[in-house]
Structure formats: C-alpha cells, structure tokens
Image (cartoon, rainbow, N blue to C red; front, top):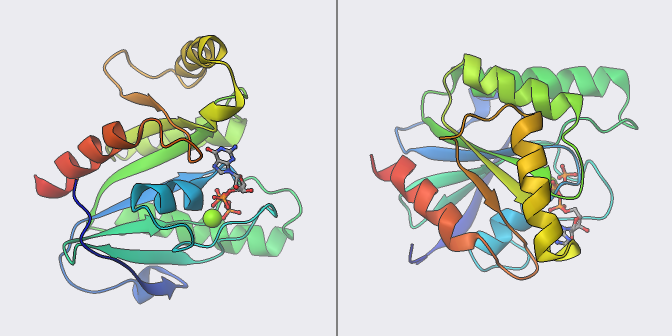
Length: 195
Ligand code: GTP
Ligand code: MG
C-alpha cells in the first residue's frame, strides 16, 4: 500500500472517547513490550510516530493514527505487564475489552507475539477471545531479526500449535528492524479496510 499520510489523531481513555464516524480501523494488540508500536512505525515508515520504549507499559491509552485520511491504525496498551498495579491493570483490561467487543468500525486485529517465545496464557486467552467474538485476526510473530531463519520457521510451527491456529489462519513472520513481512501485513490490512 502506498502511504501518502500518517498522522496521530487522538489518545482515547475509553470507547466513548474514540473518534466518531464510520472510517474502518485495524488495531494492534499483544503483550507489553512485544513491539506493537514499533510495528506501526515500520508499517508507515516513520521512526517515531508511535512512542516505543524499552520499558513495558509505554502505551497506556487507545491511540489512533489516521492513514491516508482513509482508515485508522489503532495502537492498544499491552497486556500481561506484571509491574502495573492491579487497579490499573483492571482499568486497561476493561478499556481494551470494551473496545474489542463493541467498536463497530473495527475490521480486524493484528495480534503480536514474540517469535522467540512460547505464547503466554494471556496470548492464548486473547486469541481464543477474538475467535469467540469473530474478530478477523492476523497473528504476527515479531522480532524475527533476533533468530536465525531456520529457528524462526521452527518457532512459527510451535506458535501455530500453541495458539491452536487453524491451518487457514494467517501467521506472518516480521521484524521491525529489517522490515521483513511488512508487505504481507499490508496486504491483509488493505483487504480488511477496503472490503
Ligand atoms: P507497550 O506499549 O509497552 O505495550 O510496548 P509495545 O508492544 O508497543 O513495544 P515497543 O514497540 O515499544 O517495543 C518494545 C521494545 O522492543 C523496544 O525496545 C523496541 O525497539 C524493541 N523491538 C520492537 N520490535 C522489534 C523487532 O522487530 N526487533 C528487535 N530487535 N527489537 C524490536
Ligand atoms: Mg506501545
């Protein structure tokens, strides 16, 4: 997809604060620090559009980025970050769940997992929940640059098995460092927002 514009629009504290209108949107979810914001930046070839950090828990609100004045990419806070106080965790959980269950403009969700590791119980729960709600999901295994090609391919099979992805479900290997997998991800997003 040719990107003509990518702009930050707003940080929403909840579903009621999300932009009005009928523009389609695609959201990014995954564990804290897995690389959601980095993937977003890589997709639009902007190093610092979404804030990234070594510290998990960087993204705390629902961040909307307008792409080509046509659709939104939505950067969600990560889950599974142990150091967040229980009360805050509950608030984020409710915010994400409300958004996923009730946001009509949501056309698809990109679920990121770290290609180096077995998906966590939170990842499994999230994937299961998305299928229950019939939200079209693309699983992306990121940080591919941290493994050899052979090892990464092996781990893809492990991830597919662990999340119980159907054979037909897409699973893309990605790296925000090399840009590997970017075009494949765009093809899926394009299909979601244009249909
Ligand atoms: P939260 O907002 O806290 O949920 O994190 P996030 O999922 O948005 O992660 P973020 O994009 O901030 O990245 C976390 C760390 O991982 C940063 O130090 C990134 O530079 C690094 N990182 C992200 N993607 C990649 C990748 O593909 N390869 C490598 N080597 N590092 C990555
Ligand atoms: Mg982030």
